[in-house]
Image (tube, rainbow, N blue to C red; front, side):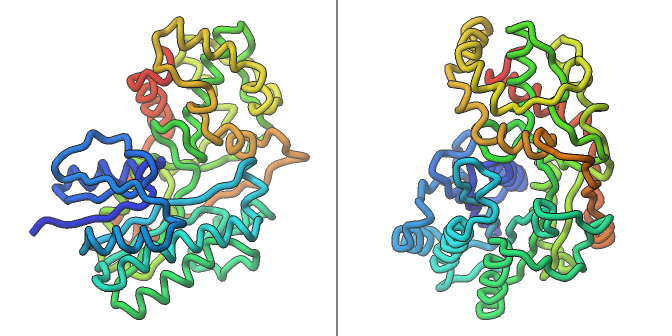
Length: 359
């Protein structure tokens, strides 16, 4: 019997990858997002352009299109400026309301399994030094976070309706997405293209030299599919990384190679400011290389603000390492690992193939 899957937030970095991965398994996928996911429409893919803050419309649409064997909730609301919103009570409430409205549409015919996403902010990485490594069994970090609001709601729903749940905590997800909130490849690629066009240095622009993790979005999607049918994943949180660490300054020359340029020595600057100076330069890049006619902000989304944070553009002093353990997910049976340099190259060349970045 064909598996029916609902993916909420289907046009985002993780959501699109999950849609694509489930389609490869032969599942029927209903994709909820304001804009279509970056996957060709086909018989087994249905798109619902819903506003998740419209409770009535969301519930009515989901009741009319279910039932679903599995639900993957990968939607998130972010305020302009990105980082300040992480501690904003209004943003937390909005994210809670979006999940609640989704679950209300699933009350009559509950799914067997629901997956949601968290991240290292669950450990308070944006507020303080975290345990090294951060493990899923740690008590909740005592700070306001929409993760906790959503998790409590999810647990309550699943207990009442007999559904299973799994929560993933992927670290710095990397993939060939653009115009989203948390994806560094379009930022790195646009920076490289503009540096090449303007004759400026392509330098690592941050102050974060400590080892870090990242994770391939395809790995995340395959973990999501794995969790649906794996009892050891039910009622559990799992960190996800590529399985290795790297440092931004040391991987930076490999980014330069993709664009046929040389990486200069690290030089601190805010990419938000760099891109603000180069909107017109981007138009020249688009024209010169025959790219899709996208303005720079449509390529970046708010990911350049995220990049300033994750690269440590405004970092004062040294950066404490913020590393997580992935022992738990491997012991549960999901053992995939990826080469981080290869993951970035795939993401950058993928954006080139989409004619978002130049060769």
